[in-house]
Length: 86
Length: 268
Image (cartoon, rainbow over all chains, first blue to last red; front, side, top):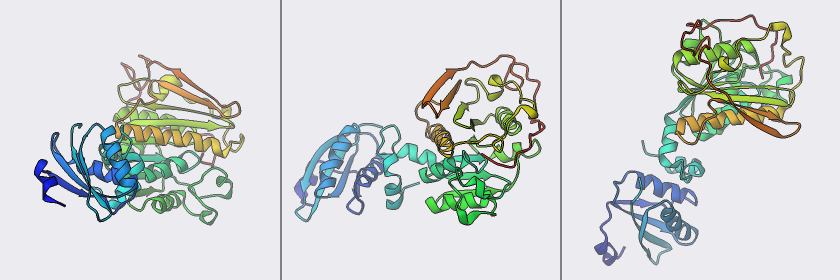
């Protein structure tokens, strides 16, 4: 995870959803968001492909703010999300 | 309580529903449902509730599995013939979801045990096949302030309603008292289509899920009827009766009562 990505938004919590497949990826992201306060930021590590395509859209649809999706170059992506809805 | 990866995967189709979410699933996992009757109605209800991740399910039945049950009582298998239905149903639920706590209770419900049986549960499912048991369960749930799902099936027809304390009619508001025993066709005298039990028992499971998760509108204050032959559902609004003998303003029934039962050894 390059430092410059973290410099802009400091995550309050971190979740790795690379060990489950869709739609459990989104379910696991929701579980992590559930533990945050409104306005806090969650950093999510997810696999390229289906998860990287679907999870940001689903999180947006859920009413949260997708801040950034960056490619880690190792088959995974890092997604930064601000929790907006309760 | 945090969900494991396995749980998040198992319940992902619930959790990703906006109305449901993590909160709804947690409510289910804390929920406790008592299913009375491991028969045609209780079978699908039990399987769906176990699969859904309901934390604790009690299953009450005094009978043993019989070959003639298997046409509709899908929680039991051919190998279960002769086995107590409560035990067979418990095994069926645990096969679907080993995380569920299942309590098998080998008993008939009666005025002397019903209050104790329902005490520890949030929601009761009436999957019995006879009027005395249905009135008993209604009265006990009203007296104990428990929500429950009533259902009945016969031939090609089914009906159900959900009682929620303080909201809408109870079963006794709709049907004042049991019909005389000789007027009641038991399931031995009248056939029933297996899939009808599946439809209606599944609707009961749906009501329990909504109640526990706190979502949607329950079938309270209404009777849903289903005619399988014509594929017709009707929802009939039913007001509470102010003079209802058990939930009315001046109830004459203040403790569970047993009625004479028509002979029937088959549990729907």
